[in-house]
Length: 89
Image 1 (cartoon, rainbow, N blue to C red):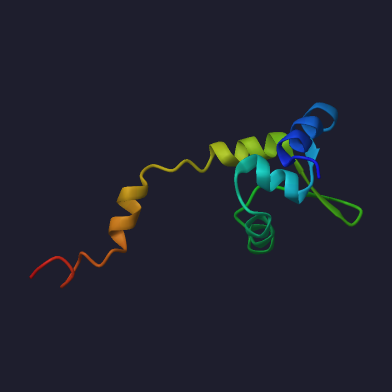
Image 2: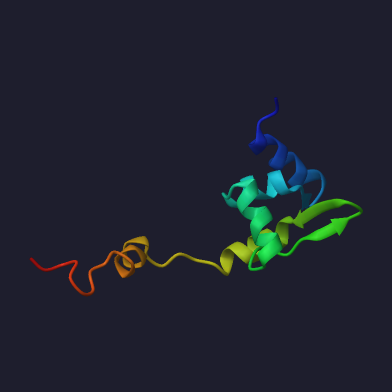
């Protein structure tokens, strides 16, 4: 089986449109996550070419740049239960 990285690189050279599997690999998400985002909204823009879903590589880059992570530690603390009784003994 062909390596996904090679497939995505070849697709970028030959065509700017990526399949869901290639797009998911390109932006570092699972294919299933990308499919859920497509249904619920909030994911990168996509196009339908007949029955096929395609993502333009420029749209993936644009979407990714618009969703930076500021701090994983800060996000984890908010839901860690430190408010209330979690931090005192």
